[in-house]
Image 1 (tube, rainbow, N blue to C red):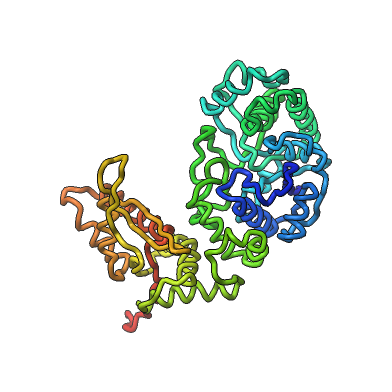
Image 2: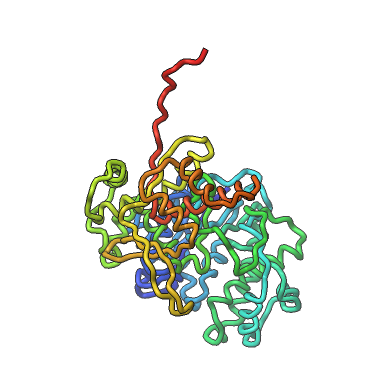
Length: 460
């Protein structure tokens, strides 16, 4: 199956200065770097773009596309808010089975043959709630044309749509029909583009329309995920600490793009895994990455990780330099995966609180009280804070000095009441495990796997 992506620069004079809904302009391009490179591990990917997109993605960032089609400049008469139009146009150009993957989607394994054999393919079905209904209520009165295929949604706002982080299938001819109706929906409302929220309009001429057309055709849609979340309730699609073992697909949709925590993970992951691409991007955004006073390559990154581990293993007194903090950030992506492996395989390991972290109180004006936080240093002399509860604080107190995980669990379960049954004890241990994993991902804890000594006394 043909794997494709599309990017339209929205006919902007300087696309590099546009955030495209992200926390910053640079994070948009970090997303493209990760998406294209992860896809290229498994597929030959073709890009559909315009001249300015070609200049940035191909000439400057040198993303590893197998083939590039510079065909989207003909969309330059559209309002820049209509971000789904390049996707619609790209669907219409396909003459063979295809799968379109958004630039904010990242994969860590191939899609299954069962999924790709579908006549239609989408990420998942979603329930359209009042969240979409309120958007539609603002848009609908201004529209001068609505296709017949949307009538069911008009009469019943609490309906369904397909999330199109991935979209495609073997019935490429039907996508031409869908693209024609979608384009007509947009074109016939040209006079009101400036009167409506164009950003929200995309949802209806793309996702909602596709659902209603496929429903009327009685065709089956293969979904990557069987769950059917509400339109505003996508959970876990930005969990970088769970790839590649627990999750192999992330989609930074909606508010994920504005999350400081998730964008920081995206940035760290790209620097760690694709340093050569990061260095190219850095030349385009020198001020966005001024906190890094070093260059990166795979060898350098390996040294940064190992220096960080060595210093904490030997308990060396050190300044928390940028190099140390970058190494710590790299390991915050790896420690949770290592933790999962060690737990699953009952391997011994040691945990300790990183010495640079502090527990302190901050006054919360909304709650009108002091709240307990873990404070840790970040690059560029910044800090980050994590609120903690009483159990968290007990765990961190136990980890003030290195301790074997099993001893930590014994110490923590000693706090339980005597009448707690076995199920209650197991639930408590699971809670502790989840908090440890969270603190590993949030750069609070250090993990050290122990080398198992051979049994020197042979049993007979």
